[in-house]
Image 1: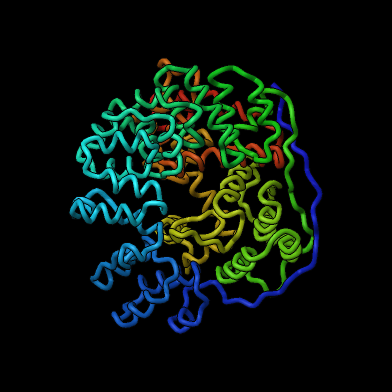
Image 2: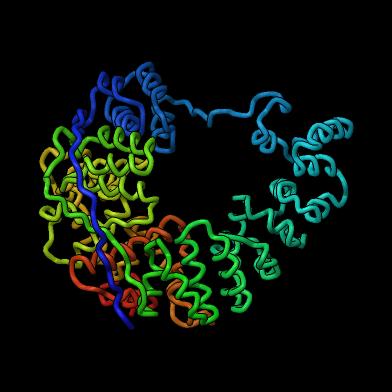
Length: 551
């Protein structure tokens, strides 16, 4: 097999822009009140509420300033205030004055069941000519064959409304045959995607998996088609699986999804033409990197920026508000405007910001692999360096002051509880504050420490990525569960790829694939070209250093 070749493409260099900013640290109450709204402010409100004994009046005032009222901050304020604020109520207008989206959400089996036949007839007349699906659902409600009528009419909306109201959902799924028309329309509903996901990943919904084999492959599109393909693989019907995967590839919305589906076309059929198609992909992912290795064709075009300027004057890379302003401005620009804006960040210390903006400017069809802050990466081992860079690129795109919606911090996105545990207890760093995670040297130091810990138990970079994202407990349970990454079985020829598609936590499932692709690229940049296949060969067998599975 041939090693993958990487080709560097030219860079655009430019001037420097100055910003004024707040220093990154736990803010005082008056500073929080004056700070611009956004995720950075939300984070400091969350910090303040947890670290100060504020009265309820102050807490309520702070809560009113939160932009993204999500799980972490909601839990803290609910607990401190002793009141549990439900999701903001929407769709409260009279039904006929609601938006179409609200109308479709509000109308349900219990809603219609409370109405008289005359009221339903009147409501059906209202929707006639406005929304065919809602009209059909309301007009046929109460008929003994209402579900079958919905299926025959291709009314996916009505079918899912009846599913939601069913007492035994598995029995409901098994009781009805789905024709091509309704299957085609079900592609647009997240609820049905979840049903397929649960059936394939968790073996839920009883024998519905056998009904999935009978779906019309041409009518099943995108992610739904991919799940049906995996289901057919699990059931040992490779020919049917191939048809689903071809449909998934033809209807994929994103390059990575198309590459994944085409890779599975190759796995189930042996058709190398599917690999050739992947060589034309503008994306860089696990699948097309392997396709290049298998075919020996096609260079991977990447950008490794190497600016000479060290810093951006008056821009504090450790200040989340500076990054919030930058990201907000970038979101308003397009094309050449974005390139011009990015050029101002072309310095060694702002490579993360520069690359983020440049990838947006090129609609994510040009791929940047910076190597920032190598002087403080904390290791001379290029293999470890490549892994840290692979993780950081996926976690934050190398933006030092990045904050996630769950308040993970910095380039390596450490959760505050873990950052504090490592900083204060494990490393015993004097005066450590969790906002120190916005400093590149600290982020890299903690990454090395955490990887040292993970590598005591795991060897494969794929498993390490699962553990970094989903936790080592999650990874241990998965490896000891006996269903994934095991030897033997009728589908062994599809391993380890089948197991990688069936990882139960969706975020970790995709995260590890992306980190692996990053890792292979960074190995080529820092060390030497490495075959991606070397990371697939032994996942079903415990590594020498692995502690969970016995050899």
